[in-house]
Length: 301
Picture 1 (cartoon, one colour):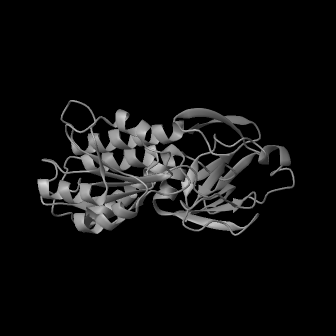
Picture 2: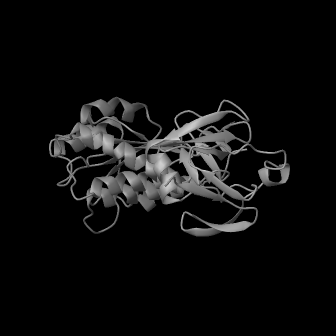
């Protein structure tokens, strides 16, 4: 028996990110089978409903956005499953599409097939540029187990890091390629959850020697180090910056040789409290402190 999607002319609750939201189905009463297409009338996409405030619409990733208003893009794979199975959205439900590069557009589900859905744009796509500070995280977390590395990627994304680079050191020497691919998927899920429009770049692993030139040219670089001056004492002495590098060592910390190379290049040692922290905890503590400090600085007019 073919699956179907009921169409209503009254309000019905939708479960969107765990919240019950009323969504008006501006459709003729009846049933739309999967594979069919609803042809909108002039009242279907009214100006009033198109001007609804953003924030309540479920958001989905699409590498390619509709080229303009009334243009169509097809959603497949994991995003299609999330849209139609997890959230149970169907024909005429409104959604937002983003491409993780600043592009955003509001659309409506036009057609649902067995393994894809077509979305028609209700407006011209927006292109927003990144704002705020740009912190680049370099952390030796490649050997972490039990989902701890995934957690680090997820929380760096939520806090607003511009990029995360797995750091190769004498005590953290190897990262398998498939882990980097997994972290890309974790990052994508996190930017959807936290409503970021620009992706956090998960870069390929690099060694200490590769970041030394970046430290030398960076406006500021903080190096997490045990028994160093607490970061809350260091930050007020640093001029307002647009971002910089945040460096965290592996389990067992950097070797003395590595610390010397990093500090001679210009990295500023900072302490994160009296307790011994795991790699992922130190990374998030350093990033959170840097983000909050930067956000608290007065805006230059």
